[in-house]
Amino acid sequence: MPYVNFMDKAFLKQCIDQEVDHWARTKNTSFCHKIWFRHFQAESNAVYLVRQYQYHISNGGYYHKIRSRFLEMRMMRRYGIFIGRECEIDIGFRIWHPHGIIINNAKIGKNFNVNQNTTVGAKVHGSWTLPTIGDNVTMYANSTILGDVHVEDNVVLGAHALLLESTTGSGSYVGVPAKRVEKKA
Image (cartoon, rainbow, N blue to C red):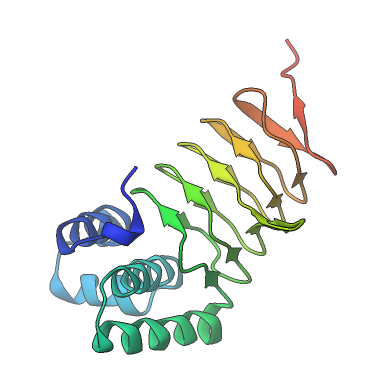
């Protein structure tokens, strides 16, 4: 998984092409559609702001520092999204309803899908304990992941679920605290 601390222009372009511009390709590939989906469509604009924010944080210098602060304020004002400065999110990030999302300093794999009012955070017991999230993970509305938790690949965290312990395998997790739900035959 690439680290945000080493995010370069090529990875930024790849992320924006796959996560933001794919919305424009589903309709039309015109320049106007790209502008619309990058700057006005809520779901794709939120991801665009997050990626730009992460790019400017990972690159030093006065301009990048000011630009990252500006983007951080824009994300907070427009959508209520907070992304930690040390957060590592791999390619395929999607925000479906960009309102009230907090992602603290976590390591997140490919194809991470998140909905409104979700929290990925840390617990403080003398030191910070941060979550690690695998590939193809989906968090539905009002779900929370807290602490030194490892989330396996292909996990779905249901609405209002609270995950406080590491997952034991792929599947759906629901409830408070979240438990794995077995499919009925």
